[in-house]
Length: 242
Image (cartoon, rainbow, N blue to C red):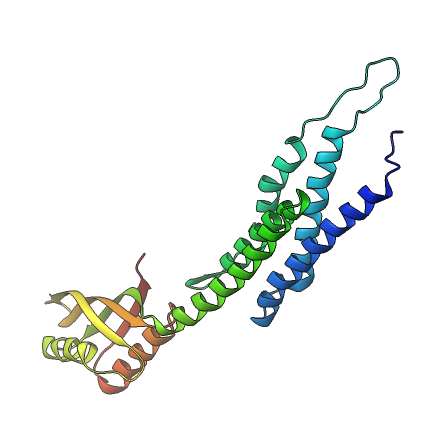
């Protein structure tokens, strides 16, 4: 078995792994701060593992590998490192969860992918790049989170109402476009049909809500207000568009 007897090289490798772990802890701390399941330990291990794999890839390429009866062969410097990029995707996919109308975990998956990249940078001794990118990632994530809270998002949805008169539908149209404390709504299209057999009027509202969080909470508040203010409405159905 071929072994390196250079203690200086051992300490150099440990230094790179240490910085990879530090970068992973910094990235994972931000995720832990927001209560994500993949937090400090997970990101630290991803960065540390990526750095170790990268270092082993370099050692395999630099150090000749002995085989009985054969000449000493050199390994491929890119083979192990290339698998980190594709392999981390499976770990990141496990953090993505669909809950109702929202998808959660995309940022955490991206952070895991980024942690692997930072770990690889430490593995090839690009420590300043790794530290700079880690600091930049933290700044961008915090700024992005702050901006998302300030920014209005469009939430398109479809309301189908059944009532007794078209006047109620027109009144509801004005109500939806009116002032609401929790959100702003615009009606893209309105289709009204009358069933002469049942004497019921149905209206299709294609609505766009603008609010800070892209979820259905404010749309359900609007439905509740319609139900309370217009008791003659027989039924209300909701469907998100897109």
